Image (cartoon, rainbow over all chains, first blue to last red):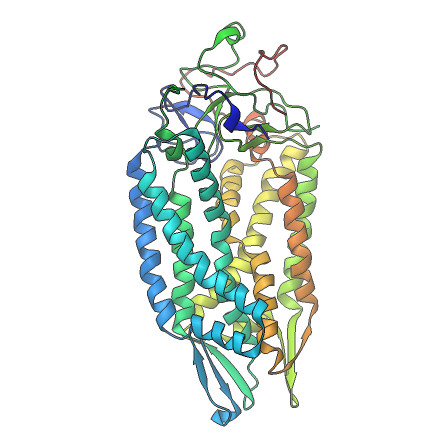
Length: 218
Length: 256
């Protein structure tokens, strides 16, 4: 690893500064007037803050979908034709139930995947989009890039809860004895995760580095 | 070694210096240059030996890591994952039984069970993420890589196929599905006895196949191979190709 932090902050020529445009998918460099990468066919977008509109739009959609995901039940369980009680569990309710049964480890997995990660992602993306393009030091830029990479990596893992509901409702169809049905929250939670993934994907990481001063003042 | 001819490079500082003499790049058209996808820093493309790793000078992102025989490995792994996925669809996934009531379900059954429900879109989305997209990605990868591994010109739309394979990457979630299954098993354990079917183990194997595939994957090498093998990508009326071979790399920080 080329420990970039201990570099003497040498000015790095970017494609943008050189009057060129880099493809964000394959890295090929083109003249500014080109609008599509001729190698991979991706749209060429200059790294400016206009691209953040897309991030905010998906982000808002994600938050909106996250509200019903917490209010409505994730799944409903019916046992013994109602004798042992029917139950409907929201996300938090499901976690409580798991703790009640004593399976702490699973409760923590579910809680992290469906509460901490989504909320953390909303905050992280919003923060990245707000500070994007603002002047920063190299160290700050590295921190922001790290956060961006973590958000990108971890986003998909929130889908765990959706898969759990899908598997349980497919598996536990034991007629009279017990059956589990997915609730409306499963759909809106899946949508929320998908929207925040799209939001993170449309964030242009090049903006993190845009605000760096041309020359270091050190 | 097939395909991996021109990979990218060491960093390029603001002042051109010694690089002016051997023109392998063109600042006007961008030929022979590569921009880091994450921070936009410009790099000069250069031959890398297999096993070398090129990182961005500014943010440290891996730009290229050509490996010997990587294309053949990737093709083999793509086929493996296709076989595993087909097995995963039709073999029983999990089997529950309690008080004489039993229910063995393959993923195919799951899909059918929901075929008339309100939650059909959810089921379709879930099946697409765990089965459809991984299979599609394997097909796209094989389509792109087989001609390149044989040293032939790529098929039509190979670039589009590979681009889509990359776009779909975050959406294929087989490994997340396995963790989800583990959680579901714990939840259902109090309610019924569960037996794991062959499809479950196929998914577990798939995780390792994906990990191996990721280790061999170098997008830059594949893009370069597609480009070098005949898709015309130079800009402007007259094709200005950069000279592929370089003898003396400029004296710059080459961090291996």
